[in-house]
Length: 84
Image 1 (cartoon, rainbow, N blue to C red):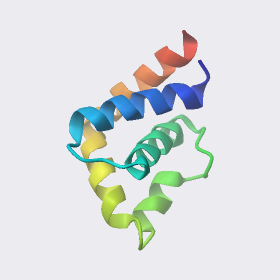
Image 2 (image 1 turned 60 degrees about the horizontal axis):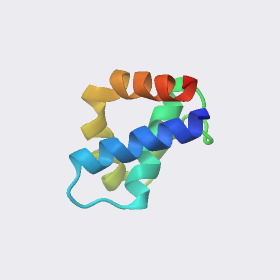
Image 3 (image 1 turned 30 degrees about the vertical axis):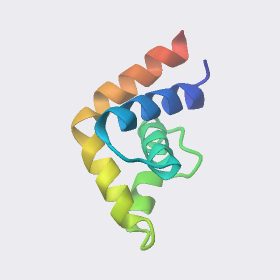
Image 4 (image 1 turned 135 degrees about the horizontal axis):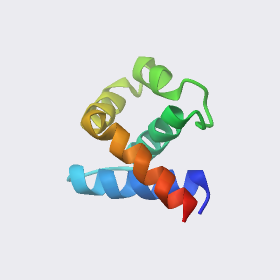
């Protein structure tokens, strides 16, 4: 599995387990935040940019704040899935 697919799988699992109602945008934010921490985001400095973007800031804050305590685990799971 490549890194992007692994990050997407981890993001989907995390968002589905922590949000009652979620959208593809939530998954995209989660996936790209994970990839940003690994240095592989399609958008350099994704997390910082999305948190400053006026139209998306509110949703991005909800997703990133929920992920914050789990980020190291999420990155670890992503790396494990990418290796398998």
